[in-house]
Image (cartoon, rainbow, N blue to C red; front, top):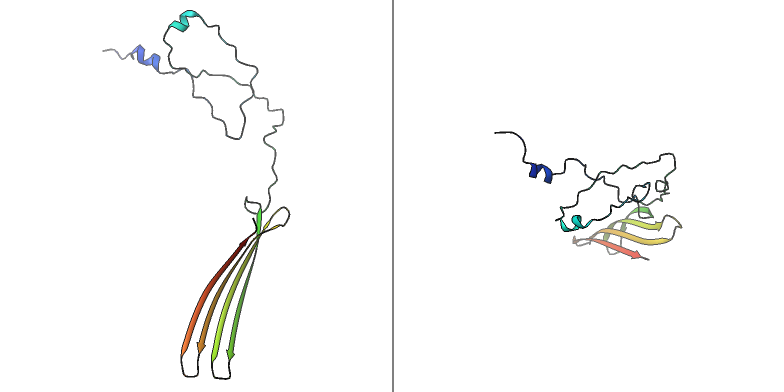
Length: 158
């Protein structure tokens, strides 16, 4: 019982080469010295059944002395990647009114307003206004009416 591996299995597995190096998607291929030389094709190689292609190891010389063009700094604008900037305003109004017939109205209003502009030239892109309104009406006979409403208005110019 020898511990020698089967030569057919060893030949099928490629131990002599490493996996090809992967490149980042945005970068181009590595610069090569020249095109790889091609072997002349013989008739015996064409007649023999071909094995699956194996990736051969290649040596690439990279010259670090030259500045890389694809590593240039790209200027960024405000707006979290979309090129937009937002201005937000918030207001709260509280009023109490008493009428001649004895009706008393308490009103609370909250207004939130958001405006979107392009970061480059301040062109107006969108306006969003959210209004929350709570009213409590008390009549002279003791009847209480409570009403609340939320209104959202969105205007887009794109």
